[in-house]
Length: 310
Image 1 (cartoon, rainbow, N blue to C red):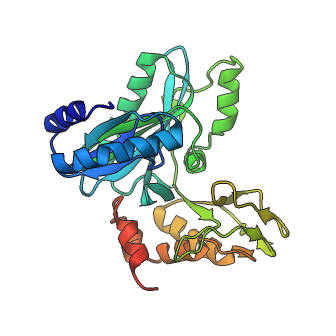
Image 2: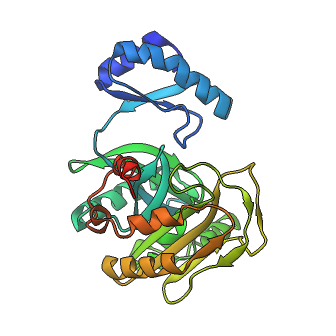
């Protein structure tokens, strides 16, 4: 929508507060929170301008604002012939400025019944449209209800944790599907095992979050059982200032969430990236935070956590 009257009509139907979101893209660009019609009229042109600058399209849409939701997404594979499987859900609620910082699978917020219901819902939706390739359906979850956000028809940054708990190489399956190879799995073949966590390591100051491009003077990634590092870094690498600040992904898997957390803390202590600022210290703080350890967080929790003195 681009018209104020249309936006106000939609907001009345949904009920305030509402979120304005860019229709052509995500990542928090063009996202504004309107608590009443006055704010909506003021924020709509701002959201449109930001959406236009980021995506070349100023159209926006509205959705209901939830005060303490979790961000839950389901990883799926489809062959375009109605055969679809899911590889479990990911909890992506640890976010700053609407950007994911840490993800885990399975979500500590869901019980087995909710997990089964969500997976079946996502599979049914993609089977009905004959979806082909890897994809992810994202939801907000609050008070036992799931609210659809969007679908990403691509591979996502956090896909490795789904690979760790399922044993399925998602990139390989994506290529096989694109090549027309027979779909090799049914849902009954998928055995989700253990717990996995991914930390996004950015070239940013861990306190101010200012970008930190420059030369990497020391580089030592962690290793060991259940530890995976996806990165192109090496000693002497020049981190450029022109692109996204993500420089590494640390993925850890364990037989239980507790074992995964213990391995995560050890891996974070081992990881050395010298010469530039990174968010490694933030992840070290998160790994020992009681609320995170207990799984008691929502999409707003991290914003408050980073403001606390170290």
